[in-house]
Length: 433
Picture 1 (cartoon, one colour):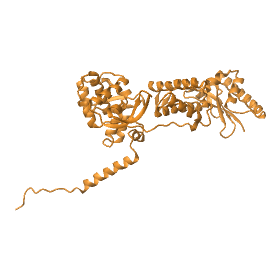
Picture 2 (picture 1 turned 30 degrees about the vertical axis):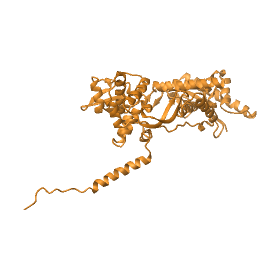
Picture 3 (picture 1 turned 180 degrees about the vertical axis):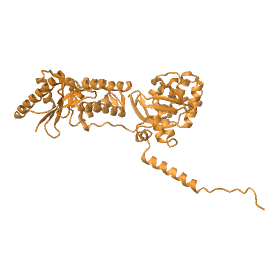
Picture 4 (picture 1 turned 135 degrees about the vertical axis):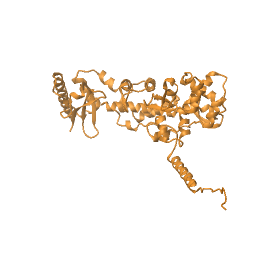
């Protein structure tokens, strides 16, 4: 038996009223009625506005009339063997409320909803923090622009309900062979597309029943880290050009504080605080919004001292990535290792064997910190600095498996047994008479 009810949806106190049509198991459709109400003015028991104000009484009458009309039209549609789905429900709302197809298009066109999704993000609350970083907004806009380009090549508009596994196959081919994007970047784009569709579903917009078949993906990448010995070589190298010395100092600091480049290159003297006689670096990560406090390593302190207590000169992310390769090359970081670098002819990363300096990026700082100190500093303390949410995330980040952990424990046990078996050596100091 079909049922029609109403539901409040929205992240703020002032919520949208959605109408829900249930035709049975797995056949539920939701559409925005266009009405809004404060959460405290809605009666959950009666599924209607509270009757405390005249405007709330009028709203209740409007919802009652809407429900009655749709029930009547539904019975007629069933008698005529019409297809009952989300589109049918939207068409009934349009007719009853004298709306044009403009409302339907605005809700169901993928790019239109994508923009709605982006517009909501400044008020999104995640883990107690409001809003998202400017970098996140920029990445989403880049994906939206890609979808726009794709629609142009396909000569059609995408609807939310078009997003399913067949679309994924065709879109991935476009990104891989027309745009020459890397596997991991394509996987991140697919993840964004599915996230937007899931948000639309939460807000009552009909999605494709095969949406769950869309899966993001990524391939394992080579982790490039520098050992303490290699960092020492870089730190002790003299450079004739100041821009290289400046980039080198930023790089070394990064390898001892474990932060993303977006946070590293923003540091100033204002980020240095003193607690219990110890100098610390305090910052709020732009991506996670987490407050991070890091003790200043002696090597970092030496760099700050030679710069009169200041961090190196400001530099862009792009120049930093370019200069640190030159820094590493001149410092003798030339070991031949496997990795991937971008082929300028195909604009795609290709696997091969290269001198290590060619593979170094800004991310090498953060990975080197996490890898070098893993096992020496308790993992929870390392996580408090890197800002990873869980230990599993951290271990995946440095590519440590369950086997690696077991071998590390076995090594601790071996050292403990050797220590216990070590017998004290007695030395005769003086013979008794």
